Structures are given as structure tokens and as C-alpha cells.
Amino acid sequence: MNHVIRMFGGDGLAWFDSPLTSFFTALATNGWLSFPFMMVVSLGALQSIPGELYEAARVDGANRWQQFTAITLPALKPALVPAVILSVVWTFNMFNIIFLVTGGDPGGSTEILVTQAYKFAFERYRHGYAAAYSTVIFGILLLYSMVQNRMSRATEAA
Image (cartoon, rainbow, N blue to C red; front, side, top):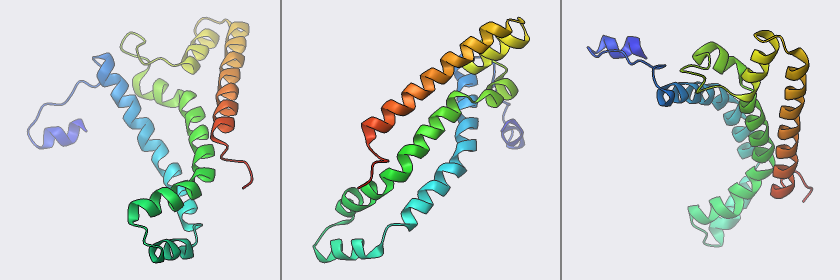
């Protein structure tokens, strides 16, 4: 990005000087990396919706918004809810982005639980503590997944 900004005569941005810009950099990188997965899931779910449903809705006088809310969204839910749960779990454990892009800087403002577990294990040599910490992280994610799946009822048979 800085190269493109400099090509047009601007000054490059200091991406890691403040917690806000550092967080934005990590967030944008995560969005960039997770976009293809969500689009493939969405495209597959959209292609599984029979065209006859939309045709019947048009015959019944439904506008595009009504078709979207009555046909598209309910048909996407069984595919998107598990994908969103998986995406949240992946984001929660996105060690590589924090470690390689921001390094947790400035001042640890972009640290996440997984990078803290790494630091406990490999910088402070507290392997038992890091293992227990990782088990707690797993428990949090398992609880989140179970609650989200139960609340959405997306994977229940129709």
C-alpha cells in the first residue's frame, strides 16, 4: 500500500505506530484471507437454491426484497452459520497474522490469546501454563460453537 501511495506522490503511512492503525492492518489482512472461503461457501449455497422457488415467488407477486428475505436467506442459513462459526474460530486462532504482520505491536495492543500462549511457551518457557491456557482457549471456542449452533438451529434437519 505504501508503494502505491508513494507512486502517486504521497508519503507512506506508519501502519504500526498506533494501536488503531495496527489493529486495522491485522483486521484487513484477516478479511483478505477469509474472503475466498466465505465466497466459495456462499456461492455453493446460492447455487443449491432451486430457481423454481424464485419463479413461484414472482408469480405470487413477491418483489426482490421479499424473495431475498423469504427464499434466499433461509436457504443460505444452513451453509453460512457453520461457515461463520468456523471463520470465528479461525480468526480467534489467527496466530500467523498477529505474529507475522504486527508482531503484537505497538506495546502488545494487537495480541490475541493464541499469541499469548505462544509467548508463555516459547519466550517464558512456561510450557505447562501454556498448555493449560490453550485448553481454556479450546473450551471458550467449543462453548461459543455449541451456543451459536444451538441458538441458530441452522444444522437441524428441516
